Image (tube, rainbow, N blue to C red; front, side, top):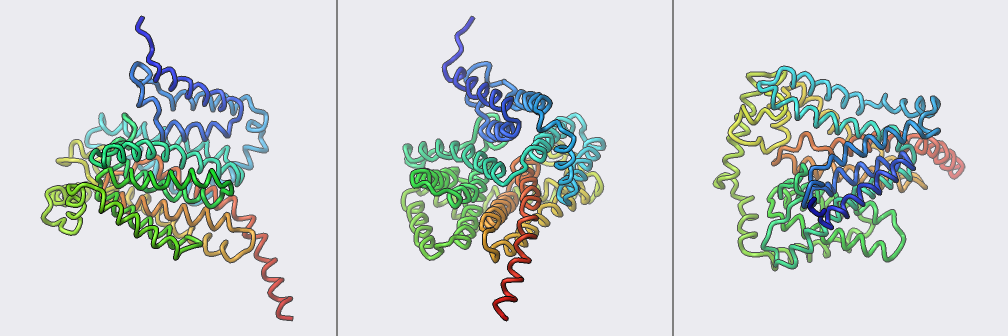
Length: 431
């Protein structure tokens, strides 16, 4: 019997520890699912552990934990948590899942569509656990911090490697994950930077703040060293939005400028030349081929406007991947699917903006303003990166949408309680 590599044993210990924590505290199982889902530790294994269904194992442990825990199986708790399902975002997401079921049924190639539909359904099942078990501000913060740390550790690994190799090698995500591709990993890393910034704003320990700042810096390095042009555009916009939300805005601007000087001064000439093609996309081969496949996607939608080609339909209907989440959703799920998807995405941005502007005017609700503002930046980062990559089925997107719904539910009593106090205070001041 061959010996199990030490790396595989370490990964087994990590997954085993997460299973134990899940059985002890059900809500910690949601965090464990996030860690395994985004870090994908089994992808770094050398032997049979690489094929380990870690996510499925954790789901089984979480179900068992919910059933044996007196608090989560009580009818009163379940009734209280099911109220959030009335949130309009969750209703739209449910309709979107039904649309995926419909387009898979009438797919041009069902044998390709159904595995993708099952993969999407697994993501939605994980979201139900988030809705059921994350019921306080503290738990929501721990979930966001866990997501931020999971992705940041991968970015730290890539950033350190990039510095050691003189920024010559491209940085990739975990093997076997949805974001192994360098372009996908760049967008994920950029989306994660605002979450790290949220953690930084909520933290007061000096050494932990320095650690988070180091993670942010290495995340920027990892995103740039992915050699992704879409990642660079997304990073630039995200950086400006974070600066705009910063309390020390004028100190952040020169820091951002120094980072840009460092990048263009230390990266190889080939990197600068590749990034320079952003401004001459009409003559660049990759951009021209993307325009061609976008036209193919629009033609498929015109031919099959209600159901499209079905999930993963590009295998049959196009010459290559759609390279745009918007075209992907339109071509594979038709106009109804695109309308539902854009409605929940854009509607969430509007909702987060309303919460942000309402909360920042009220004393004691700084955390609501921070959470809503940062989630808005992360979703905007996704929308920019998704314009150039097929990321419409990404689990991080739907996770952030559900977290936004949870934030709305948690913030509503605080906002309602503060408004009368502010109004009465203003009247007394006038008198």
